[in-house]
Image (cartoon, rainbow, N blue to C red; front, top):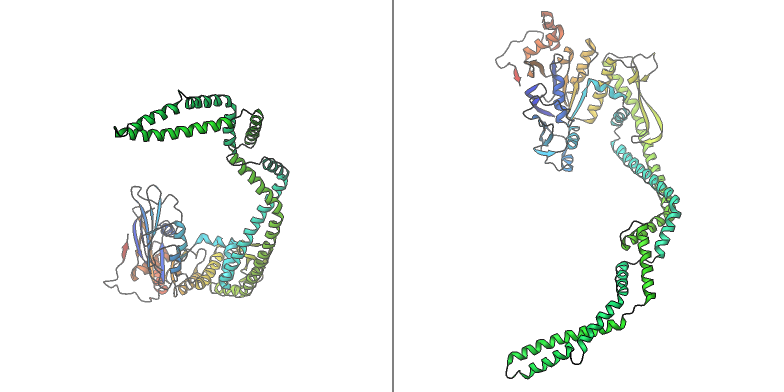
Amino acid sequence: MLRRLSVENYALIEKLELELDPHLNIITGETGAGKSILLGALGLLLGAKNDGAAIKDTTRNCKVEGLFDLTGRDLRPLFERNELDYEEQCTLTRVITPAGKSRAFVNDMPVSLTQLRELGTQLIDIHSQHQNLILSSEEFRTSALDTVADDAALRAEYGAAYARQSELRRRLSALEKAAAEGRRDEEWLRFQSEELTAANLREGEQAELEEQLAVLEHADQIGETLTTLRNRFDDDETGVLAQLKNTESELNRLRDHYPQAGDYADRLRSVLEELKDIDASAADESERLDTDPERLQQLSARLDTLYSLTQKHHAATVEELITIRDGYLARLAAIDHGDEELTACREELARATEQAEKLAERLHKAREKASPAFGKEICATLARLGMPDTTFRVALEPTQELTPSGRDTVTYLFSANRAMTPQAVERIASGGELSRVMLALKAMLARRMQLPTIIFDEIDTGVSGRIADAMGEIIASLAETMQVVDITHLPQVASKGQTHFVVYKRDGRTSITRMTAEERTTEIAKMLSGSRITDAALSQARILLGQPERPARSRGDESQTLF
């Protein structure tokens, strides 16, 4: 439950801190005093988007912070899933900077707005007067019925089956599209792949051929150069090898007289061996080298083929051509085996659909079983709210296709008069009737969902008198097992709370004060008679509060203004 709410620099709020009671908290105040601003700040704390109007003073941050008591709530798995430290006294913080940037924290650890919203939905349910329109939501009507049917595990199992079926539908559609495109392109793909396959492409081939072609095109010049080299090496008198050999012999003869000559001779021997190897290689290359016009023509033709293919297929190298060829072959293989994959996908989809339909049927039966009790409980609550002749029942109509929630269209049929044919509640109920229906629904759901805190924002709109009193009793009964915050304009409802706050505006600032017993009597009287408080209003206020006699004011019974 929410123990403390503090707000700084938000809209008309300079600074405000609110300590809440564990049971029923009443908030009243004149129209425009800022009650909706409090809800806006609380919405920010629970992950609502910043509408850009949050900051009062644009020179500093807006900050909203709430202290929640998680005792008795099984929220540790949620904290662990989000990698957050779990503490039973949990602090949520939302900061909006003057630049409009948002930061959120849980126990001082940064979190995303998605994480903040996920946690917020487990802590507080806010019902505003505009939320009566939620009755128009098929999702809400179905979810409410499922809550009463207590089929959460079945709903989750169906959701997984439906998601699997939807995934297979998308996959089958993609396969069918690919198959259609494949059949359209098959002839072209086959021609292209056959052309590239027939070319017998080999990695590195182009570079090798270009090197061989360069040699053949310059064979005469290369041959002349190699011949000149060998002549200079091998001539009997002037050849390099003969001269160096003679020099080596002369140096060897000087070894005994000039030791360093031996070192020169050894080093010269190494040079001679290298030069002889060059000479031998040049001889071999000269014998192998051939102008061979036929080979030259073959190389040129092969390279022309490779150049033509790379240009046609917009490839830079033969390696890219090989990749393109393999891609064509893979697409052809997919076409050749596409029917098999399509068949397998259709069979898997049929099994998934059958499973989802079985679960949808179980959901339908669970809803069908819960519907009479659902309607009966709503009618019983509405009778307490001055609508004893109400008809309220749940109608289940099958949908043609499976939906995310099953195969049911859930409609709430309503009539305030038994003589009238029930129709969809959102179409025929008046504003006051909608308020009472929503309170009955919220009361029923709150007990089953076991939310720690529920906030009603003028859910009593459109009702008065004894109906307002009955509405207050229902709200008070909820507060026996959970924390309730009720923003109201009705004195009958306001009198039911254990704790009473008044929101007011002073010097353009929104503030809130916690009423003492005597101040509360005055506030209820003001709600009854207006700004001029009469003795009759005060007397009626004491009756509503269960204080037939004027209470004596004690020293400690002073109000505390929180701002």
